[in-house]
Amino acid sequence: MDSYIIKFTKDLEDKGKSIHTIIAYKKDLEQLSEFLKTKKIIDPKDVTEEVLREYFEDIKKYNLSAKTVSRKLNSSRTFFKYLQNLNVVSKNPAILITHPKINPVIPRVLTEIEYRALRDTARSDQRTYLIIEILLQTGIRIGELCRINMSDLKLNKKEPTLFITAYGSTPEREIPLNEQAVDAIKEYLTIRPQESKCDNLFITKNGNPLLVRNIRTSIDNTFKKAGIDNAKVNDLRNTFIAHHLARGTNIFVLSRIIGHKRIATTEKYLGKIQLNTEKLPVLPVL
Image 1: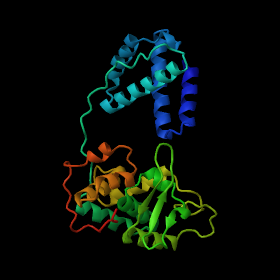
Image 2: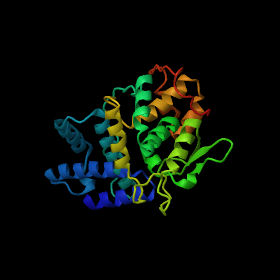
Image 3: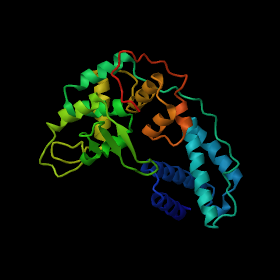
Image 4: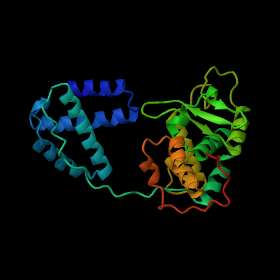
């Protein structure tokens, strides 16, 4: 079983799946493997639907969220489908097991006061300010922000843009930059270490790329200083999406800009969020 898990994760890597997906699936399958060992099952061919149902009943003791259980089921389904394609198993034992019901969560969006407080608090540090400004004004993911290179910025164009390179299942795309974002970028470039040979936009004082965990910590600290409770990094992306929908941006254009694979993912914001956009800075016209 364990050797097949290794081959499966290698196959996910070869297909360009997200590193986060690969890590999550690997951990899920390792947990399943440990359960199967307690049942003296080490060959995937001996895994039945009944055994898997017993496994999903057993993990209830961990009080996992419905979303986590659903992901674990996806991990099992995808794994056994992979083994089925290799003719290791004759059928997928997870295919008839149903997903738990997941109650929709209303996306957290910054209020006007929080929006302004966060930006004002961050101004004391130009790098942190730019990080927050780009996330608020473009709606990109933190992983995408971490991978921005100097060459991805097109500031001299009549309509400045930021190019996002393809990564894993995330498509490449070009995002318009508004005046607030461009000004913040130019201010940061005046203090960015010039001697660094690193092409990353965000670097440390020693010229090394700034890691995602450092960026996340910086944003969390700014939330705390600004007195914003129960906010996460992804809420900046939520705010961008909700802001544009409130202003009437075409949902198909918005979905492409933010890199959603399915329009339904963008639609979940409709009718669930009320946002006063009258006094917020004007975002780029998409």
